[in-house]
Image (cartoon, rainbow, N blue to C red; front, side, top):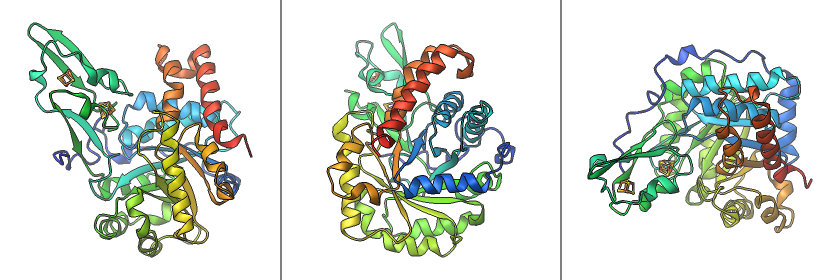
Length: 377
Ligand code: SF4
Ligand code: SF4
C-alpha cells in the first residue's frame, strides 16, 4: 500500500475553507436527547450510519444525513472534513425541520492514528494514460461508489477516479488486470480534527487503530487533540488483531476522558463489506463474541458491531445466547448506503426532500435498514 498521500490530512477534497467555517448546528443538544442515545445503547437499540471515513461527496452526504436522520439513527459518522461536516449538519437540520424526528442524531467524525487502517485510503491510477483501449474496464464495474469513470479514445482509454466519491473499499485494486490502480493512504491530523471538534458541530469522535505500535500513536493523537471536554462520545474502531490491546487503549484514553463521556468499542469484522452479502455479517459477530469471552470490554463501556454488518447481522447475533443484551448496537455502512443509492441517484433534485417520490422511496429503504436491527426486540 502506498503512503504517498500521507500529507493529505484534512486538506483534501472539497476542503478549501478553514475548519473554523463550520457553523454549529442550529439546535443544541438537550439533556433529553443525550438520554435518548444513551438509552438506545443500554437497550441494544443503537444504530449508527457510517457515511464513510473517506467518503467526501458533500451533496450525497447531505442527503444521506437527511434520510437517515429522518428514520431515527442515533449517530451519523462522517469523514473529518469541514465540507463534509457542514453538509451533514445541513442534512440533519433539514430532517429536524420536518418536525417528525424525535432526537437529533450525534454527529461523529472518524480519524486514524496511523495509515494502516483501510478506511483511510483512496484509489489512484498509477499510469492513467496506459489503460489499453480493449480493456473491458472491470474497475468501473466493481466500484460500489461509482467513483471510476472512463472515456474511450483512439488507441487508449482514459480512466479517472473521483477522489470525493472513492471511500477506499479496495475492490478495484485486484480487479485491474494490468495492476494500474493502487492505494493512497493518508492520516487525518489531530490539529485539523481538534478545530472541527471545537466548532461545536461535532459531538463524537471515533479513532481507528490497528494497534501496530502498542497504542503509542493513539496516545499521541489523543494528547494532541486536547479538546476532550467537547466530546459527548468517544469510540475506538479496531480489527481482530488489536482486540488484546483494548485494556491498554482504555488506560491511555481514560487519562483525559471526562467521566460522563460515553465510551464505545467498534469491532470491525470485515471492513467495508456490508453490501457484499450475508456471509460478511458473521465476522463482526464472532469478533464481539471473542471480546466478551476474553473479558476485554471495560465495565460501563458499549460494544458496537461494524465491518460487514447488514440485514443478516441480527440473525447471527441471536445464534449466540445472551449476546444481544451485551451489545450497544450496530453500525451500518455499505449496506445502508446501497439501500438508498438508487432512490437518491435517480433524483435530479439537489435536496432530496424536494423530490417527494424519491424521498419516499429512500425513507422506506432506510427505515428497513434500521428495522433490520431494532424490530426484533
Ligand atoms: S472500488 Fe472502492 S477503492 Fe476503488 S474507486 Fe471505488 S470506492 Fe474507491
Ligand atoms: S481495469 Fe485497469 S486497465 Fe482496465 S480501464 Fe480500469 S484501470 Fe485501466
